[in-house]
Image (cartoon, rainbow, N blue to C red; front, side, top):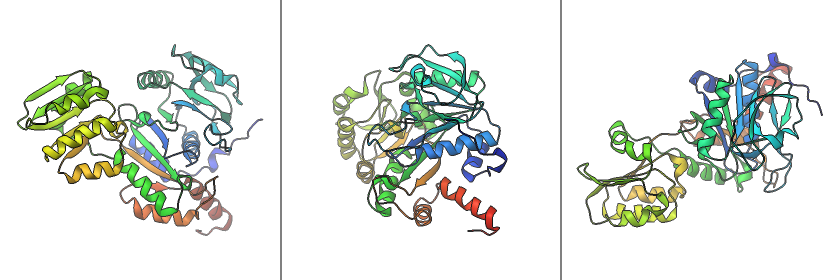
Length: 369
């Protein structure tokens, strides 16, 4: 099936795209709260805006996306819509099913379950399945290759249950898609989204703390310092095994702990125990994508007097809304947008479909809807 792309001159610059463009960012991650919260719609919006602005785009994904139906609930889902000139890094197998013409540009020598990740140039508007590298180190290589091939902005598409592509070690900015598919009423969605923002949005450490912990995040491992800044422990051990090691220092005058890897339940219990003993404890993690805890855990931790910061802070470029749920329980779009804007003060919140519909109404009637 051949798609006729919209007239580029009719695409009005959106506030979301303006923020992305004005920031000068080189890598943008798009992630969803869950399936069917509008991640692909948000990404397609950015791709269309970039095409209209004549910005050279690179596109890749962690895992697989762009299927006709999602692989969890098997509901129909919108395809990824690529534009002429887009550079796409995707697995060889997906190219056999591509619904657009493409030209091979480069190979990455990075393998995946669906074959080597190749870089192709899209020759026409249409839909495409994208399956990129899964490991963070490979993603960085793919991003570098896309930039070498001419991409000014690389867009990273996420996958369910994975958020490491949103790490500031990989992406300069993040779009978070949320919506009715989370379940419950509008206030339930707002609460669950706020909880996610509480984890992703932990503050960045100050320069003094970053300098103190630099070795941990450069080399990997765990670091422990006393309240005077003296090193108690600094080794490249796996974060998975760090809980027991931390507990060995529960009676010491611990001031700061830095862990480079993922923070799961076992490690969090050890950190919480130390925080109970040392209320002024400072804990530094790589960034919010490394936390596999609930926001309530974080709030309890803070009530103890402890502080949790990221070595790097995540730049949340925007929150996009999807009022529709394929499982039922959809919202009225304008009401959802109004409630979300009031709830997420300080964040840029938008519904790209509602904005586009409003623009069309203005063109047709000459009046603001």
